[in-house]
Length: 308
Ligand code: SAM
Image (cartoon, rainbow, N blue to C red):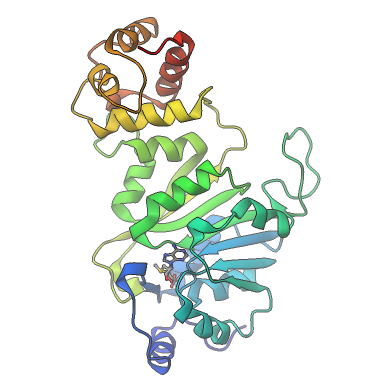
C-alpha cells in the first residue's frame, strides 16, 4: 500500500506547493482529490492484472497511483513537461508505470499497443478476427476537457485495439455521448461514440472532487469498444461527412443540410431519392435518424455513384 496517496487533498496541496506548480488552464488541469471517485473509475473499467492501461494526462499522478496497483502495466501520456519531475517523485514506488511526455494527439497508439504486447483480445481467443495478445489494452483517463472530442475521435478513427475507454468528461458531454435520436443532446458526437462503442454514464462527479474546482459538473463514462461495429457504413468517410453535415445545420431538413454541404458530394434530387428508397420522409431532419439509418443513407448515396 502506497504511503502518500494524492487522493488526500493535503498530500496534493503539499506536492503542488513544494514544486511551486501553477495550474495551467490551457491544459485543462484539474486534479482529482476524491478516492471514492477513483475507485469507482477503476471498477467501471474493470482494471485487472492482465491489463495494460494507457492513461491520458496523469497530472501529478493521482489516478496513476491506483492504476499502478491494479494493473499489470500503466503507460501515462502527459503533455506538460513541468509535471514530469513531479510524476517521477509521486510515482517513485510504481515500478510498472512508464511516462511519455507528449501530446496524446501526436502519439501512435497502435504502435504503442504493439510495443506493450497489448490489444483487445488477451490470451487465446476463438472465433475472433483479431489476433490474441498476451495483455488486454484499456484506456482510462480524467480527460483535459478542452480537447475531449478530438481525443475521442482520434481514438475511434485510429481504431486503437482497446477493449474499453473509461473517461471523466464534462457532464454535458457525457449526456451528448449517450443520447439517442430525437433528444436535444443527440448530435455527431453521439453518433461517433455509439458507432464504435456501447457507452454508459457511471456517475456524476461534483466540482469539489477536483483541485482546483472546475466550473462544471463532470461524469465518468465507460465505453466498451466494438470489435466489429454492429452497423457498418461501406464508406466511413462519407458516413462521417453526412453525419457532420446533418448536425451542423440541425434546424434544416436533411435534404437541405446535405445538399448544401460542400463536404457531401450529392445534390437535392439524389438525397431525396435515397431517402424515398429507404422509406424515410423527405422533410425529415438529421436529429431523427438512427445510426443504422445514417449508415443506410450513406451506403445508398455511395451506390448512386454519380455525384452531381
Ligand atoms: N489524471 C489527473 C487527475 O485525475 O488528477 C489529471 C487530469 S487533468 C483533468 C488533465 C491532464 O491532461 C493534465 O495533467 C494536463 O496537463 C494533461 N493534458 C492536457 N492536454 C494534453 C494532451 N494533449 N496530451 C496529453 N496530456 C494532456
